[in-house]
Image (cartoon, rainbow, N blue to C red; front, side, top):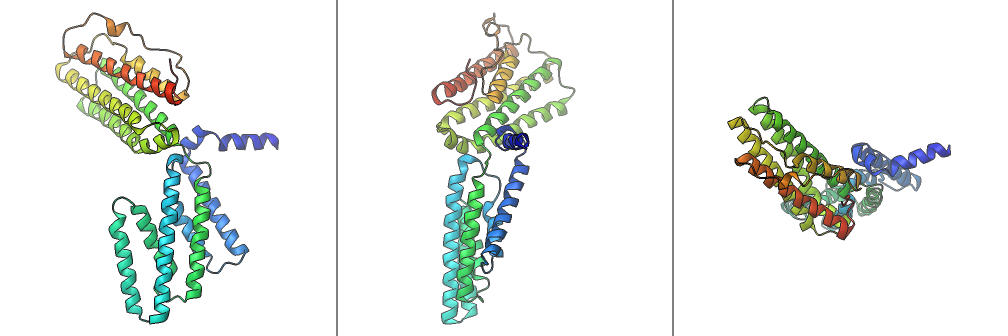
Length: 337
C-alpha cells in the first residue's frame, strides 16, 4: 500500500510526466473540480447549483502555466464579479420597471460592450463578464431571489475553479527548456542531413518548415517563464533571437548546397554545440561532453559555406554563453560548463 502511494506521489510531482501528459493531467483536474462542485452544491442544497458547475467549466479554461495562473486568476475573478453585479442589476431593474424589451436591450448593450473589449487587451475579463451576465440574469425573467442565488453559484464555481487551477500546474520554464532542446536537436539533425545532401527540394523545405514550427511556441512561453524564474524577459528574447538566427543560417546554407552541389567541408563544431546545449537544457546539469573549440580556430577555407559555418558556430557559442550566464546569475536550470 505504501509502495503504491509512493509511486502515485512520484507520478503527481514528476514535472517531466506532467509536461509529457499535460492533457491527461488537465482532464483529471477538470473532472475532480466538477465532482467537488456537484458534491458541495448538492450537499448543502444550494439552489440552482448546476450554475456553479457550469461556471467551473467556463472559468477553469484551458491549460495554464504556473507563471500565468495568478494573472489569469485575477482576470477570472474580476470578470465574474463584473458580470454577476451587472446581471443582478438587470434583474432588479426588471422587477421594478417590468419592461422586458428594455431588459433585452440593456442586456444586448452590455454584451455588445463586452464583445467590443473582448478583442484586445483584457479580452478574457470582458468575455467572462458577458457570460456571467447571461448566467445570472437569464433572459430577464428571473426573480431577485433566483438572481442572488445564481450570483452565489457563480462565485462558488469560480472559487472551486481557481483552487484547481493552482493544483499541480504545468511549468512554462520546463516547457520552454524541453521545447528549445527539441529545436536544437532537430537543427542538429538538419545539419547532419546537409552533409549527405537532401533528397530533393521538397525534403529540404519540409525540414526547414519543421524548425520554424518548433520555434514559434517558444515566444509565447517567454512571459510566463520570466514570471516563474524572475529572469528579465529580454534574456529569453535574446536566446529566441539566437535560435532564429541559427535556423535562418541553416536554411541559407542548405539552399546554397542544393543549388551548387557543394558541401560545407570541415564542420566547425556546429552539431556538437547544438547537442551539448540540448543535453544541458533537458537535464539541467552540466553536459557530459563539450564541443571542441579547435575546429572554429582552424585555418579559414575559401567559399561562402565555410564562412557561414564559422559564423554559425560563433553564434552558437554566444548562445551557449547566454545560457551559462542565466545559470550562473539566476540559477536557471542549465548545466554550466
